[in-house]
Each structure stands twice: as C-alpha cells, then as structure tokens.
Image: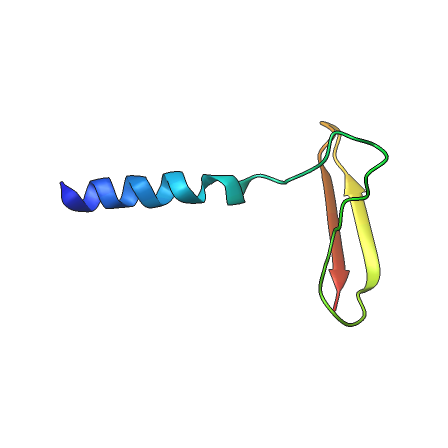
Length: 58
C-alpha cells in the first residue's frame, strides 16, 4: 500500500512536465530549443487536428 501511495505522489508531482508550456500571448516568443550549438534542418508538420510537431538535427 505504501508503494502505491509513493507512486501516486510521484506521478502527481511530475504531471506538469507532461504538458507543453505555451504562452497564450502571441507577442511572446516561445523557445523551441534552448540548447547551445547549432540546431539545423528544422522540420515542422501540422496534423489535421491542429497539433504541430517540430523536429531538428543537432
């Protein structure tokens, strides 16, 4: 029982990391990648339901 409670607590603490943190303000730039170095050949795809995927090579 203690293990189940620990697992539930950990999942509840980590749930914010499962969702994208996008701003509702169109004037604010959202960082797609904050890594150092060059990120090359970006690929952007939009699905019919409105979801957008962004990929790149590092």
